[in-house]
Length: 356
Ligand SMILES: *[C@@H]1O[C@H](CO)[C@@H](O)[C@H](O)[C@H]1NC(C)=O
Ligand SMILES: *[C@@H]1O[C@H](CO)[C@@H](O)[C@H](O)[C@H]1NC(C)=O
Ligand SMILES: *[C@@H]1O[C@H](CO)[C@@H](O)[C@H](O)[C@H]1NC(C)=O
Ligand SMILES: *[C@@H]1O[C@H](CO)[C@@H](O)[C@H](O)[C@H]1NC(C)=O
Ligand SMILES: *[C@@H]1O[C@H](CO)[C@@H](O)[C@H](O)[C@H]1NC(C)=O
Ligand SMILES: *[C@@H]1O[C@H](CO)[C@@H](O)[C@H](O)[C@H]1NC(C)=O
Ligand SMILES: *[C@@H]1O[C@H](CO)[C@@H](O)[C@H](O)[C@H]1NC(C)=O
Ligand SMILES: *[C@@H]1O[C@H](CO)[C@@H](O)[C@H](O)[C@H]1NC(C)=O
Ligand SMILES: *[C@@H]1O[C@H](CO)[C@@H](O)[C@H](O)[C@H]1NC(C)=O
Ligand SMILES: *[C@@H]1O[C@H](CO)[C@@H](O)[C@H](O)[C@H]1NC(C)=O
Ligand SMILES: *[C@@H]1O[C@H](CO)[C@@H](O)[C@H](O)[C@H]1NC(C)=O
Ligand SMILES: CC(=O)N[C@H]1CO[C@H](CO)[C@@H](O)[C@@H]1O
Image (cartoon, rainbow, N blue to C red; front, side, top):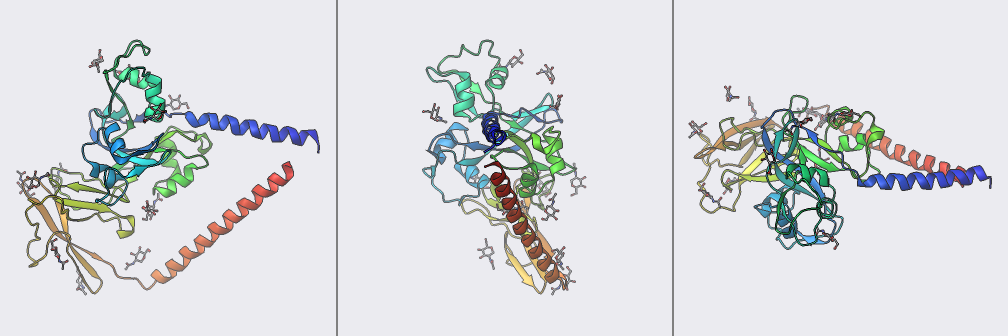
């Protein structure tokens, strides 16, 4: 075998080593332009150790377990003792505030220093590099990072944003980039575009994406009938998540497959809720749906202040005559993907063959 080929194999090994070192990168703050704005945000947490939902809840000071369940679309009956495996990723809901051009968690999470703790250990081993020790140092006015004392309460500044994206209100999600993923792939998975992700994250080229980085991904929320004078306005619920609202009387979920329409009904977790009935249509209660021909009529959630507001909402579910052909063309696209992946494997094997 020619030495030049050996050389290229060892170069490959070195390249792989370098890129796995890059695994430990944090991208830095997310842009957040409207000073003082607050909102809800999400961030991935890759738990370093095996734990439970209760452990995660305590670490991030999340008041209600159901917030974690909703963010991860786990059934509302999931117990706090539910196990979380080491290296498992969970979405953490937290409040965000814009300050001086960037967004950080608004208050919680707080971390209480234990004996022999270090700022870097807290950033790296406890919060899995969602922050750097310099960021913790800055937000807590710590002059010497080597001087922290047991019992000290530290604010942990998670990155987030409240900015609209492309004229739409969104939920900003700090996505921890897995090895081998691409900007295009992430964009597709979360119904956004590569250009939007590059712009939002100040990336010049898609190749600049690094595994382990925290990427600002704008999540589209389901459209709702919630009025702008409602106490929970704007109720932003992204695809595949659910929330409890209206003093825990109402549960709303978002499923992109349901035409991106927010689905709300009685929560059944608060026994002192008034019945929420839609005006007019007799025994038509929040969450009730009737289908007449092609029309689906729903008693939809419209917000709350002292009472729960509802409204009758109609949409057409008519299958169009040409919806058959669109299904066929979708299938065709799927085939293309399979063929493409197959070809990519062939090319990879060919390359490997040439190397060895
Ligand atoms: C605001 O940000 C600018 C640059 O990003 C920085 O120079 C300045 O110190 C920051 N101000 C505060 C109060 O953090
Ligand atoms: C995980 O375990 C390591 C090693 O015991 C420890 O240093 C670290 O603080 C733990 N992280 C959490 C979040 O408990
Ligand atoms: C840090 O210092 C700034 C200005 O000196 C002050 O506004 C802020 O409240 C301090 N933050 C903490 C957590 O002490
Ligand atoms: C919505 O979430 C489901 C479940 O995770 C996923 O399969 C689907 O691709 C998502 N759709 C969009 C448009 O984000
Ligand atoms: C988002 O999903 C909708 C369908 O739910 C699709 O029409 C649209 O093209 C998608 N947008 C992006 C940017 O992928
Ligand atoms: C964007 O990246 C460039 C270099 O790639 C840097 O000079 C600039 O400060 C960055 N801007 C923000 C807002 O992070
Ligand atoms: C609130 O919504 C009403 C219509 O429902 C609209 O007339 C009004 O301008 C809106 N107010 C704000 C502040 O957006
Ligand atoms: C249950 O609903 C009632 C009536 O809306 C409200 O006053 C109460 O605070 C709610 N309880 C909880 C635990 O959310
Ligand atoms: C309408 O909603 C009420 C209250 O949630 C429920 O008890 C009832 O079964 C629903 N009726 C229909 C026809 O779905
Ligand atoms: C569906 O709704 C439209 C208007 O919203 C109405 O004109 C039509 O008659 C309805 N069709 C059926 C089958 O109920
Ligand atoms: C509650 O909402 C209703 C309907 O939008 C409105 O008429 C009423 O004034 C609101 N009440 C309060 C206290 O805001
Ligand atoms: C009448 C109707 O529901 N038509 C739908 C057929 O499918 C296309 C795309 O899949 C929709 O855009 C139409 O609204």
